[in-house]
Length: 255
Length: 126
Image 1 (cartoon, rainbow over the protein chains, first blue to last red):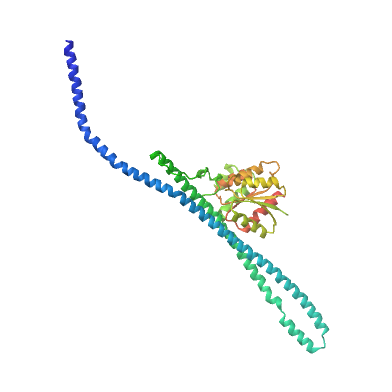
Image 2 (cartoon, rainbow over the protein chains, first blue to last red; image 1 turned 120 degrees about the vertical axis):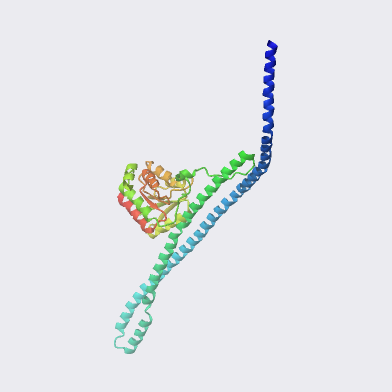
């Protein structure tokens, strides 16, 4: 009786085994397809890996180029400022000379008048003196120069003010650089995970974009008329009377 | 009033522009610092400085941190500080106000605004 039970179990197990082989036969083409797919995918992944590695390696060059642009702009701006300062200094010195000429001329006019008085009655001498006076009207000639100098000074100062654009664009470029370096950092870590590729890390700034209050640049820096923004700052400062502003006060101000 | 300005900015260009503007307004004494840390060292070394003009975004110690350091220092807390920055959003201005900045200018600035803010600070002090 017990033998019959054992044979029954044996047949059941053989049936299970048969089912397994049957299932395995069905699985073989699927596994083969999977192997073929993997075989095709590996070179593709290697290509992607290679491509990321190459792109990542180029990033430091890009950031260097941006840094070079900033440096070149700063150097050019300094040269412009030097030139403007030199022009302003020349104008300042020329103004001193012209003002001295005007002062001397006033003294000359005074002396001419005295001489005129002394020469009264001597028509020939009076006539000669009048000719000298008419030839010596320097003041009328040089006074317009002072107005021109004023215009040049204003223009030079306006150039100086416009050069604020250098600082603002430098901050924008620094923000772009930071962004590129962040991408490079992410790609490098991706590569390391991917295939332990040895990609040279570039130095990434410690500060986060999300907390740009501590960054050496403002990613939102803009070179444009800031009248409205300045007005907002003025309103805030006036309303809070230079004391600590609460969020409620600020919200009331902008509601 | 004779003022001695400490002009703090990591941009050489901006420091020159601010100083040129101050010179045009008739001021003659200036000290320069390239970041907040440098500024605090200059303030410690020179007690004749009477007015600070600072940028916000600078390496090492930012302008905001500089203001906090000045305003919480018993010796320096009365020193007027004017911030000149590209940061123009409401939250930034509030943060600077909370740090007790005396006035605030958004770059690019005009000489008229610079004069107006310096005059306002001085009249509030007197």
